[in-house]
Each structure stands twice: as structure tokens, then as C-alpha cells.
Amino acid sequence: MIRDITVGQYYASDSCIHRLDPRVKILGTMAFVVILFIINDIYSYAFSIAALALTIAASKVPAKFIFKGIKSILFIVFLTAFLNVVTTRGTHILLQIGFIKVTLEGVFMAVKMVVRLIMLIIGSSLLTLTTTPIQLTDGIEQLLKPFSKIGLPSAEIAMMMSIALRFVPTLLDETDKIMKAQQARGADFDTGGIKQKAQSLVPVLVPLFVSAFRRADELATAMEARCYHGGNNRTRMNKMALKGSDYRASAVIVLYIALTFIIMFVW
Image 1 (spheres, one colour):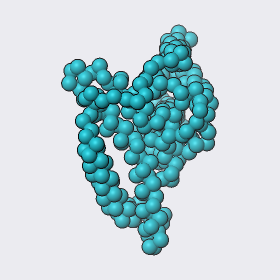
Image 2 (cartoon, helix red, strand yellow):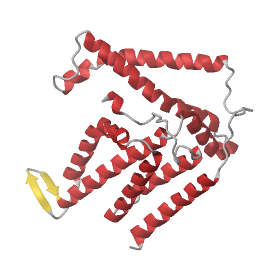
Image 3 (cartoon, rainbow, N blue to C red):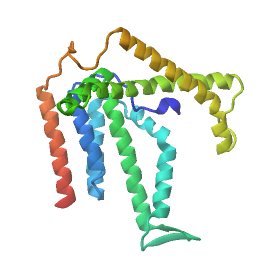
Image 4 (spheres, rainbow, N blue to C red):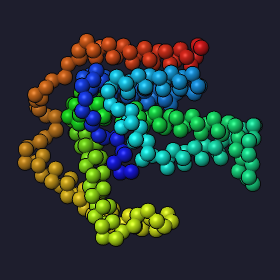
């Protein structure tokens, strides 16, 4: 389960998506997320699913590798579906047990929210799977740079976000090692009720937090020893510049947004 989380990991490949400018991929992902929270009909969802499938195919990242990230959020998916089924009111009642009513509208709402959540996770994972942490940092910093005129520390924010994403797979590996070490000492994480399982995680969380704080302190010491001072007068070995493929990808993103609104409001 721990190794199934794909957000924050990078999958090395030579695809047209990997070669795109990180700013284009970040803005495209943001547009995709916003569209997911706007669309509300089956045709728009079908069009967004098709666009996401084509993007996955173009990225050359195995679909099995991407979809295994859904395993880590199955509990959230089922909880979201259950809450939407039992809380959404409607006129077409399918099942009633006491005060709990299951309506056709609730089932539709649950399916819509589950599909939206899964697409949100896959789209976010695709950004980190096709973009290295360094590229992601530079892209976020360049996008936030205009806001530095009003005092926003764009370089510091970009570095914090990049470090947070970079530490996700590191902490997952550390958690997996600690759990295996505790299991070798006789710990049981699979049996018992929710309370017992929560108590069994205490021997994992304590050393995990200690390890995380130690890594953060070592990283801060290393950055201080290298005289890191944010984005002040810093230069880069590889400067980002938009190429023809980036402009074509931007046009495709704009076309996707336009077609989505046409499907929603015209069709």
C-alpha cells in the first residue's frame, strides 16, 4: 500500500510530455483541475476522460503504474461515495432503511464525485511523474515571479513545494522500512479493529517523525552551508525557454477548455 502512492514520484521516459516546459504542464494541470470542478454532465466527463487517456498514452508512462496510485485512496473513494449516497436528497427513492434513504440522484452524485476524485489524483500524479523536482521548482518559481513585485517570496515558496514533493517518496520508503522492522520484531498491523490498528501504528509514527525532523535539520544545515538565500541573484545552468512544442501544447490546452465549455453550454 505504501509503495502504491504515485504522487511526488518521477518516471523517467523520453516522451513529448516529458520534454514540455514545466510551466506549460503546471498551467495545463491547473486548468484540468478547475475544469473538473466545473463540469456537471456525462458528455463533459466523457470528453475529459478521453483527454486524460490521450495524455497518459502520450506520456509513455505505463497505465498500470499510474492507476496503482488509486489503491492508496480507496478508503477515501468509498467514504466519499457512501456519504454522497446517504446525504443527497432526491425524489426517486431506491432503498430506505430507517432514516437512511438511497435515491437515484444520490447514486448519480456518488458516481460523479468518485470519477472526479480519481481523475484529480491521476492528473496530479501525471504532472509529477513527467516532471523532475528541479524542473517543477523552476516552473513554479517562474510562474510566481510576477507576484514578487508585491512582496511574495516566489523562490522560497517554489523551493518549499519542491522539497515537500521530493520528500513524499523518501518518507514512504522510510515508512516501509520501519514497518518491516517492526513486523520482524513481532508487530501486527493487519489484525484487530480500527482502535487496535491505530495503536499498532504508534511504533511506526514515532520513529518516522524523528527521522523526518532529522532529515529536515540535515537539509537546512546543507542549504545554509552552501549559502542558499532564496532567489536573490541566483543563476541557473539551464534556462527555461518555450519551444514550438510548448506553443502547440498550449494551443491544445486552450482547445480542450473551449471544447469543454462548448459541450457544457451549447451541445
